Length: 256
Image 1 (spheres, rainbow, N blue to C red):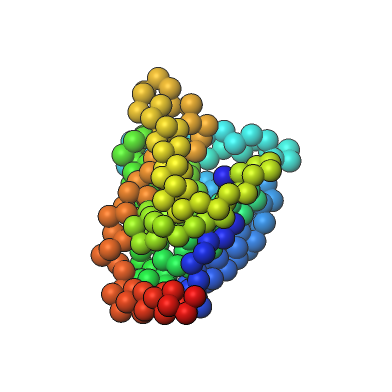
Image 2 (cartoon, rainbow, N blue to C red):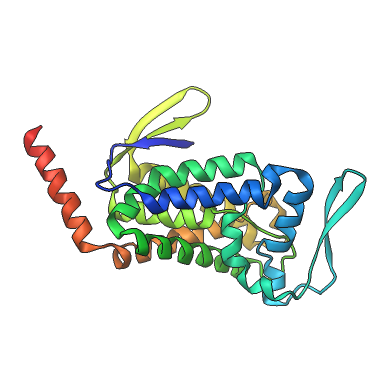
């Protein structure tokens, strides 16, 4: 299911949400070659978050085959480069394909602008990065020796979705369910259903003989990011901005 929009106008232009989207798309074109096979593979291998590299549990020199690009067989090789310590943050701005990028951008726009409106710009960016790192750590805890790189803003955006659940549970969200359904439902229903689907998808990862069942998606990063977002939402909200939003909402209710 895909959220299209919500009935939750912002009081201020969501400058940082827009900036995060611009940075993410700039990285996609300038660093990842707009999805061209070779730059995409190099960026994911060199800058993606690899649990086994971060934990030092994967043997140095071990390679994960990527397939054939042009006339070359490519592999991601475990190394000990200093930049590996920064990959929990860097990987938030990388993506694995057009669908991955567009889906994350849509979720960030629909839910991020309102969370920014209640936190303020500086707090929102810090919250985004913290939940992104927390998501990477959740993935690390579940599979600390994995040599497979992970990329994407999904963990950070999951944190924003958790915060949205705490801040705006009753706001209605227009949600498209392919191929024909467009529903207008409360945010809590959309977000709880999404979280439940992640838990169901992630449970097999806890069984050591069935790690392949989640299809390569780091669902525990999503779960971890969402849970941290729920916990930190009230800590990061700006009381003055929240009060202002409520005042405007009450005024609209009186005039309507």
